[in-house]
Length: 85
Image (cartoon, rainbow, N blue to C red):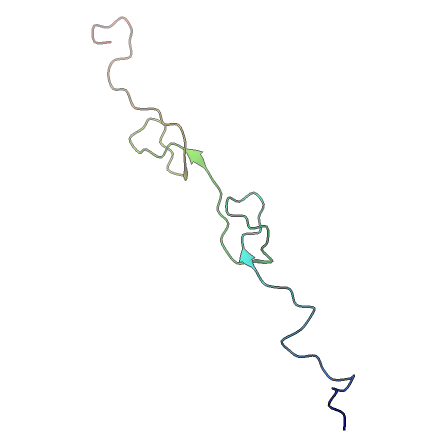
């Protein structure tokens, strides 16, 4: 009796050559968390929006998520000829 498997035997379910390895990640190339090796969209993609993050600044941007240039608020008279300029 031979111990060789039959040539018509089904392949092992753990060794299917047609299955790719699943790598979850953001698959959108413009996103800041893009993962080139990802094979399945499994994470939310995030995008960078530069802007001023300081809420007291003149140009504060509540939608920004990356620090940018902030312009401080200057209080006082803006008329050059005034005594309190």
